Amino acid sequence: MPAVFRLVPDDAIEILDQTLLPHEERAVRIERVGALCEAIATLRIRGAPLLGLAGAAGMALAAARDGTDDGTLKRAADMIAGTRPTAVDLGFRVREALAFALRLPEPERVAALWQHAAQLQRDRTAEDAALSGFGAELLTERGAVLTHCNTGELATGGVGTALGVIIEAWRRGTLTRCYMTETRPLLQGARLTAWEVLRAGIPGTLLPDTAAGSLLASGAVRAVITGADRVAANGDSANKIGTYQLAALAARHGVPFYIAAPLSTIDPHCPDGSQIPIEMRDPGEVGGFGEARWSPAGVDAYNPAFDVTPAELIAAIVTERGVLWPPFEDGIARAFAERATA
Ligand code: MRU
Image 1 (cartoon, rainbow, N blue to C red):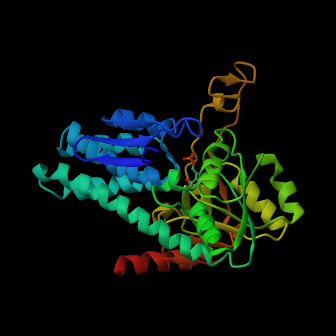
Image 2: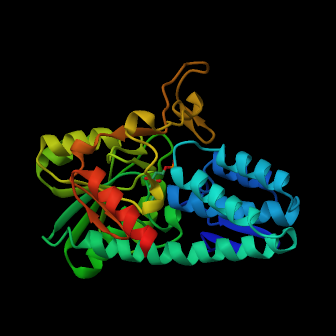
Image 3: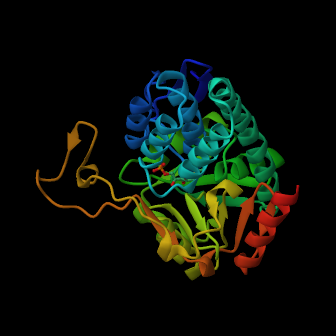
């Protein structure tokens, strides 16, 4: 299989085109910032932490291909960060790379930005591994879990966030089955999570998003765990559309609902979920998929890519620095303060 994400220093980025999975494993070579923005907007590359890595690499690409002066780098940063508004990692990593480059003399910027992206890729792997270990400690009682969207290597470049926890629990022998929603309308669960779960050798069961209430009512699931695209300072968490209803249903049935996300997905400047920008996507995504169309042409559709789960429905947030418990304001502030002094 081609690498999910590969840096070709001074030259290009190679990604696995996620829109073709699971039927075709094709690498796409990206040589210009415009092509990277197209790949992000169309979800060829996706998932909050991996978007952060792509954003940092995009800054290296801009410097290598378009120029190293401040104006060129600032324009590239605005362009890349503007492609998808909800995942905080994207804008955060782009601004971080920009600030890093602007501190350097121009002749050093290209090499330094590629090295910066390469370091971030190594850090991603380490963060996911740490987060997965902490999360697996929440799943010590044997049983099945339910997850939503896609949070594996395809979404992070490491082992994954929620799916990393699931894989680690399977490795430790405490997971019996992974239930996964289809995740309409772009089917990240049915296409991507099902593919990753099968590859990990985990017994997996796919369900329509609409079957989650029935599954939780049956008692088959002992925890729900998802990723996040932006966690506010009070713990309110934006994640793939449909996450909020899973959290509400989990509460209704007394099942713990966990978020797994690295600190780069927590936005300490965003006070609560009402301030999280939610990406609205093309209504055409709801009335069909790929070439297939099942709704009449011209019908309008409500198609937010994400929703916000209020902190009160979240039992814990798993990060690479440990598990945060309610009230999340305190734990989040402490985790950032500890990281700043580490
Ligand atoms: O629109 P997507 O596919 O980029 O949305 C991704 C998700 O919502 C994931 O669950 C989230 O980014 C967590 S990724 C570890």
